[in-house]
Image 1 (cartoon, one colour):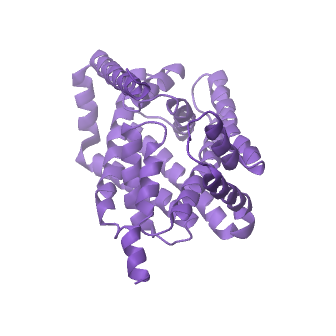
Image 2 (tube, rainbow, N blue to C red):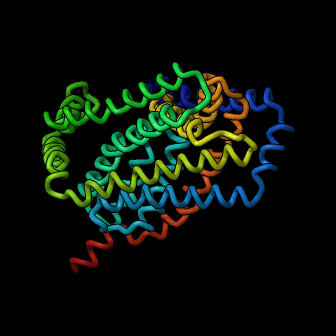
Amino acid sequence: MGRATLKKVVRTALFFLAVGLLVWLLDRIGWDEIGDSFERVGWTGAVLLLLLGFVETFLDSAAFNAALFGRVGALRSMAYSGAGAIVNIIIPWEAGEAVKGTLLTRHVSTSEAIQGTVLWNYLFKLSRPAVAVVASLFAVVVGHGVDPLMAWLVVGASVVALAPYFVFKVLLHFGALEMGVRFLKKIRVLRQDTQGIAKAAHELDDRMRSFKKDSPKAYYAILLYQSLARIVAMVSWGVAMRLVGLDYGVGLIALLYAALSVSGYLIMLFPVRIGVTEGTGYLIFALLGLDGGTGLIIAVIMRLKGLLANGIPGVFAALGGPPRKARQNRDNP
């Protein structure tokens, strides 16, 4: 059995294991209770959550468009981001970013698409945990109603979650992308001549290092849109909690969101998303002394919201315009 085949077998097995665990947890909660929770949400609540999901997706897409200096458009970026997000749910380790980058080459050069994608993800490593830090500290100040030690652990975890941003920032100073290409060549993942790839990576390193200085307006626009998207996500979780009948205060909602946001870094380590994310909702609620079953139900509701909020715009990705080759031929007859 080849290595690629073995990876597919392991990934498939883990997928069914995660889904099986999700079904088992749902069965333990009770299908009647789950049905009652969905009835409490109702069609009005579902529409409200979906609208919030669209706003969150649009803000993230506006940030991505800012990373591309407005050359694609927020709505078109929303379609491409939606398609990429759906792929990320099915295939792990941010495979959707490659899909999004490929779609972008209909409108911008490959190097511009890569730069925009890398830049968005780079600043996302700052904006997401930064909002979690603010949310968790807000919860500590206004009150949350759970074990204070657990609350401070969430604050600490949110601060630690900033580490990937600063690590990448330091590596970027030393040419992280170029070093990555040379490392892949050394371990023979890249077997062809990497001189051209290394040169492109070196140029991208330079552009990433100077982006804030050269384009401060775009830099802060990306951070602002991403941060607003995370605030909308927190509001969505709070609305979902209220819709299922939980009378949580804003402090507890903020703390739960921070904990769930930080847990996303652990989820990225797993080769599957469906089942693992929902199980994390169960675990976070239980660790904070709340009903884990309710946390799982809310996580399932938010999963459905995310699938629709990204899937509906993603359908329009095919309408994004002609392939770049066709555009080049049109521009250069």
